[in-house]
Amino acid sequence: MHLPIPDHGGPDGGPEAAHDFSTNASPLGPPPALMSAVQRADRQAYPDPAYGALRRRLGVAHEMDPELILPTAGGAEGIRRLTLAALLMGRREVWVPQPGFGDYAAAAQALGLAVRPYADIARIRPAAPALVWICEPCNPTGTSLSAWPGLGDEHLLAVDRAYEPLRLTGNAPALPPGAWQLVCPNKALGLAGVRAGYLIAPARDAAWFNAQALAPSWVLSAEGVAMLTHWHDAATADWLADARAQLREWTAAQRRMLEALDWTDQRPSCTPFWLARPPRPDIALRLRERGIRVRDAASFGLPGWVRVSAQPRRSQDALQQALLEIESEDS
Image (cartoon, rainbow, N blue to C red; front, top):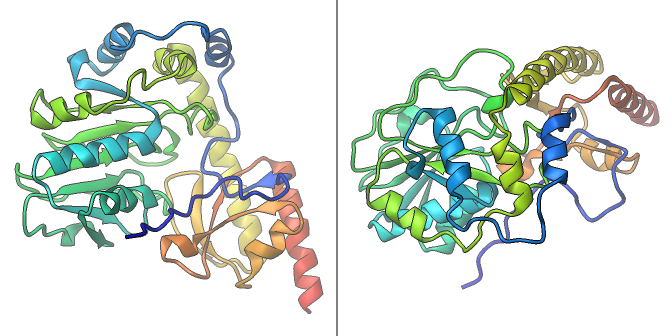
């Protein structure tokens, strides 16, 4: 059996893009103090394999038992590990958002688990104990829930909160009891290349034990430890608040600019990235030829759509000029 290779965004093997609207990482990072700590990380020694000091620090920030915090090598590794933990507990199906991040389904398929895509969270109806993934706010849509699904205790509910720090409007509903959380700060910090995050287990149960035991040795690098150590610093929180204010301004300006160029079908979003349907189906390729990248949403099951993210004004000006040139060529 040959498994499908997940289609990721980001670098595509071509020339470096001068203006990258495809990323959903913050264009404003990283915070100076946190970046300084990452650069000073001791790369000559192994980190503590139990990550005791880091877990205690995160435990204080979350006001919870530090043993329930499990460091991960970014979100993708956490998804793979929790999916395997669910399999070991007898789960045989995994519910995944559609559209959504492809690694939820890929992790399940790699283990021979049944994948159940859902578009409407209210329609989740597992026939047997299952693992249910929710991305809040959701990638690629940038949408947020008004309520959680009503699931029984026999199901594992896992909430991917990678984009919560990039929420520009509104609030997420309070997490239901028993939910797992996946926290990945690197996108909000503009440090997507530092692969570090953590799972938060709801209790010291079988899933927690398995997810802890399945971790590779030294799952976090020294740089990852440094980033997570300073994730909840006051200086980081202040920087993020200022970043969100700037991103709100850029998002509003970019939406207006695209609408004026006939991108009238732009979906609502509470994040600085959103789905849009351009007036020309080949726009992603034609922009790429001009050194501008947007995220073709076909791999999310949305042909004809792209995901765009708010970028600085100079990049917006470049995008506007490129779109005007394409329009002129086609007229």
